[in-house]
Length: 203
Ligand SMILES: [Zn+2]
Image 1 (tube, helix red, strand yellow):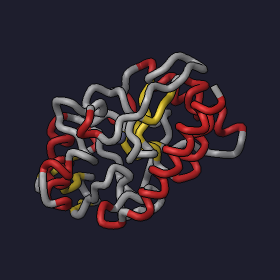
Image 2 (tube, rainbow, N blue to C red; image 1 turned 120 degrees about the vertical axis):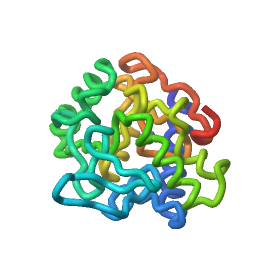
Image 3 (tube, protein in one colour; image 1 turned 180 degrees about the vertical axis):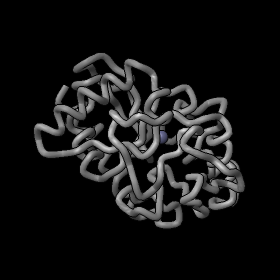
Image 4 (cartoon, helix red, strand yellow; image 1 turned 45 degrees about the horizontal axis):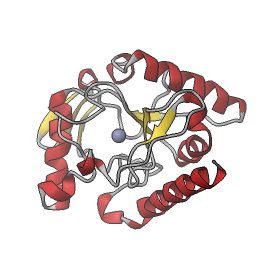
């Protein structure tokens, strides 16, 4: 299945390239001003750790992770604690393997409350100009796999590259062609990843 894997890797790299090109969508996960899912935050209160997103105030209780402080899968915060146990276990094992190669796997989004997801969508509509375009980057609360704890967004480009090469050994697969950072537990350990969807509006 070498050809199959190569094709997937090619698509994944293309998505990474798109990530750099689509500056309007603010998708560079290494840029602390921008979240990898294309959203941004603008209001932050150090006192109560609340954040303005899409006109709503969200907190760590909603699964918010500060843009400038991506976390490991061992962090004690709702974004991690509310993840599906099998996904969390897989990311933990992948993180251990990556650490052996000197790479720290960081997560900048995991579980999100419905209200946080809706705020991200509202913000996406504002940034992208239409619901249809926003839906290519941010799913609805009803459909988002983040809301049910079944997705993580990686926080650094090194993590993305490592996971593209090694994720499936832990059952972890990139879901969308345009989101090289978004991983779900969607195959068996060492199995083949399913075909990627073009973007989140397709799923
Ligand atoms: Zn995601």
